[in-house]
Amino acid sequence: MTSTRIAGRCLCGAVAFSVDADAFDNRTACHCAQCRRWSGHYWASISGPIDEFKVDTGEDKIKWHQSSEFAKRGFCSECGSSLFWHGHKLDAYKSRIAVAFGALDTPTGVTLDQHIFIADKGDYYELADGVPQLDRE
Image 1 (cartoon, rainbow, N blue to C red):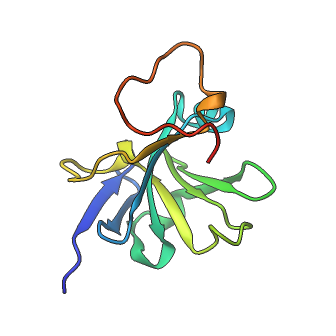
Image 2 (cartoon, rainbow, N blue to C red):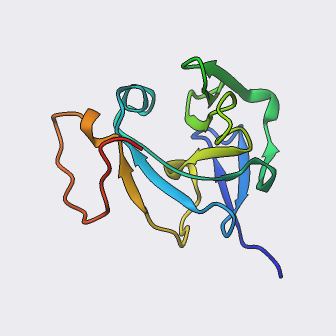
């Protein structure tokens, strides 16, 4: 069986990547304070096995910021696009990576599954899309 790849890139195109659409099955919008600061709003991402993620160009342009004791966030060093989240020090997430929905080429053919950490969401917006909401993760 052939997998369907979804391509993505940063704003300037220096970093391009692809993921296996079938393996990347966790589609969330995180509303925690870190994700809001990182992305400028909430962090909408699709995640899956890191071995089903491929950097096609610009691996040397990806910079990582250790945003907490257990996770790091990847961005393009040329344009600053927020691209990746990797919980590299958490057993449940070591082998997975999350990529920004907004960096994916459209159409993606996928939709959001859930909102997480809505207890921390900003006070400047409401969630009325009918997608399940979790106070935490």
